[in-house]
Length: 235
Ligand code: ADP
Ligand code: ADP
Image 1 (spheres, rainbow, N blue to C red):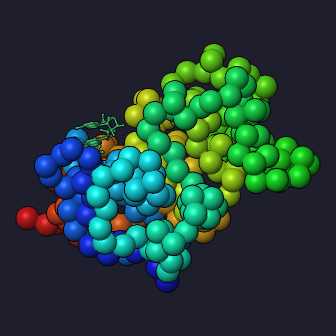
Image 2: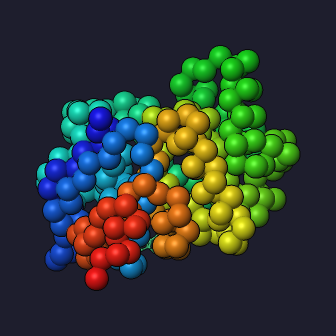
């Protein structure tokens, strides 16, 4: 059953002359792994941000069409309600990491949700282990590498156990081995925990090996969509 539906979604940033998203239709089934790719400026980041309400709420501009989460229009949901369903990892780990140490970074969102301390500890350790950085639990965030920050940003969102995990270029700071590892973690979350995964990625080959549905965007429109096999067989 669909967990996300986009119905003729259009978005134009303030003071611009073209739609960044221009009539996007999309159905994402619960538990699926959807990959978005396309050239810079295609609208990938804007699409990701429209799924969790960032675009209409914080940027202004003009949004038309519908985004449905579990059948409900995002315009009828509060930011907190959207946040409980959808966890988003943006592509700037420097900006996303706000606390001085790894433990605080993980605890921040959980405290806001009123998760009891004993459960917090377990969720934090599980989330770090999931992205392969369990050993960094007590570290200062300033001392982490770009790749470690990227993993921490993912762990912090995982600890919240969202139904849908959305990631914008989660491997931009990682080497090929690290990139593969992140995708393996995402696949495991899909297969073992039934999580729905949406991810943008410039490394199309990597993306195609892990996603069930591959979507190619260009100039704000879906130009190809299907299984990786279908997309690559297209003339
Ligand atoms: P991608 O993630 O595929 O590189 P983006 O979603 O960042 O694409 O951008 C889509 C289009 O929207 C581009 O034409 C970009 O220049 C424009 N855009 C993105 N962010 C803004 C913004 N804050 N203000 C105005 N235009 C923007
Ligand atoms: P990405 O390629 O990962 O989408 P960009 O480098 O395009 O990232 O954008 C980085 C930041 O600049 C984003 O916050 C985006 O909203 C903003 N931005 C992108 N294009 C424009 C634009 N034409 N005008 C204003 N801001 C923009």
